[in-house]
Image 1 (cartoon, rainbow, N blue to C red):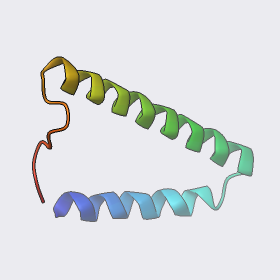
Image 2 (image 1 turned 60 degrees about the vertical axis):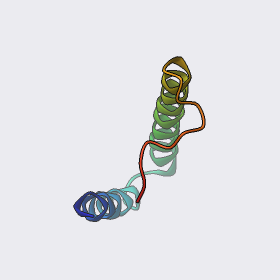
Image 3 (image 1 turned 90 degrees about the vertical axis):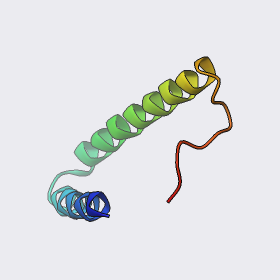
Image 4 (image 1 turned 90 degrees about the horizontal axis):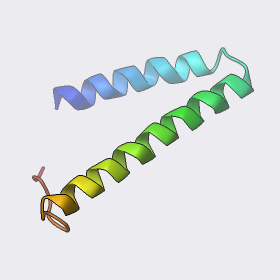
Length: 61
């Protein structure tokens, strides 16, 4: 729960900062974040397949 609160706080700060920078800078930052997330997801998917956990959840809520 504390992680979610911290994530929302950081997101609020980031969105406030985005309002003050030019659009191309915001788009470049968004593209960088999207690329990082895609690479992370691909790495996790490959790791799950390599360890035989395909289709299984790591935990619940």
